[in-house]
Amino acid sequence: MLLEGKNVLITGASRGIGRATAIECARQGADVALNWFKDREGIEETLGEIQRLGRRAIEVEGDVALPESAGRFVSAATQALGGVDVFVSNAGICPFHAFLDTPPEVFERTMAVNLHGAWYMTQAAARRMKEQGHGGALIAISSISALVGGGTQAHYTPTKAGVHSLMQSCAIALGPYGIRCNSVMPGTIATDINKEDLADPAKRRYMEKRIPLGRLGEPRDVAGCVVFLASDLARYVTGASVLVDGGLFVNLQ
Image (cartoon, rainbow, N blue to C red; front, side, top):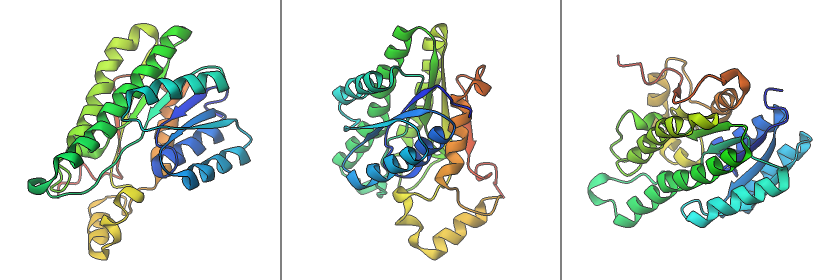
């Protein structure tokens, strides 16, 4: 029960890494607040899993790209759960697109959700933690794409590099308040975001072959790392990034 007595807020919690993280945090004793957008079926499934674990959970719909969503989410969570101990910035999109003909609206929406949304939400959670006066943990889901390029991800990779950089800066700015700030960099994790891309059997086999552990990641693989960073086991870890990629990044052969 690594998170017993803690309140955890998670954005993009209706599916994928967000859902797995929410469930694992609940399994480890936390009560959770879930942000979601346009996925009622998904968030109901997430809530059901958490409630079966006997933990408190609330859901708040909101587009993270809108600044007002951040304050509304943090306020609702504080009112319902009593405070904010851990915040996980997970919400993100990755509409694969060739660089040379990527429409401005695709670039701008990706930037607004992945980077601007992370900034707004992180700031709102950090303000609440400072007011509470007993520190906390901020964790951003970045990506291996913060470190490497992707031919159809030129609008996406800068956002994940930005999220990683945001946590580094926040670690400095918020350290005096006892707030730890870290990022997690998943590799190829099988989620709805890349479902279509990995539907090609040849592409899937190629990716699996490149990973030393021999398989694609699962959302729960990332969730375990988030729980560690959220817990007191990581009480002296801040400004760090953790690759959760099965060894993909180091496999240059």
